[in-house]
Length: 257
Image (cartoon, rainbow, N blue to C red; front, side):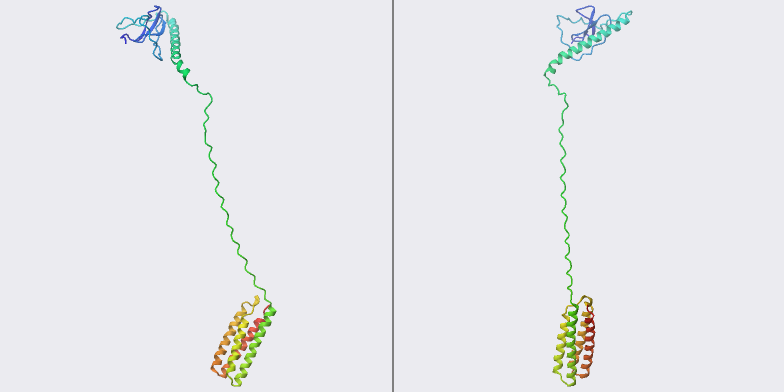
């Protein structure tokens, strides 16, 4: 590298021109010597000039750039514009020359915009619809059988009549001072009470009928206890209680519909 600073100097080829020295060699940039021009913007290193064609200027301490004439201010502006145009043309030519091969080899970009493949969102899997649980329909309660009220009254009356007959036999036995026959009579009374309890009862006496039978059985228990005493007066008093309850039970049976 030369010690001569970079700048514009008289061209070794043409004294009417100035050429730019980059401290190492002459560049391609030149301009008329009538006016100074600014240093060129060098995009890339200019091609080297042979020393024979362009000898380096003799070194000097401080080369003075060529000043424009004082009377040619307008010419200086025109010359500067021309020099700037020359510099720009030279720079563009150098850039085209250095980058031409790269552009020839570089693949051409497609003008069409790139299509970006996007994944379509997956459709959500529908949640299974819960199967409604069928509520079991309770079976209808069986209807109560329709009881023939006429038949009920007839059967109940027959069993109650038999009980009155057994009570009459007990009175006769007491009057005859018999005992073993009393045991037989009380057994027949218990049998008739069971027959009454087994009857199918109409709906309208479904409550009153069982209550009446409970009272009847209670008087039969009193009669059985009286027979075990073998006391005639006690037995006869118990017979009267049973007979009264028999008639009360008959009244319930007769009210069946």
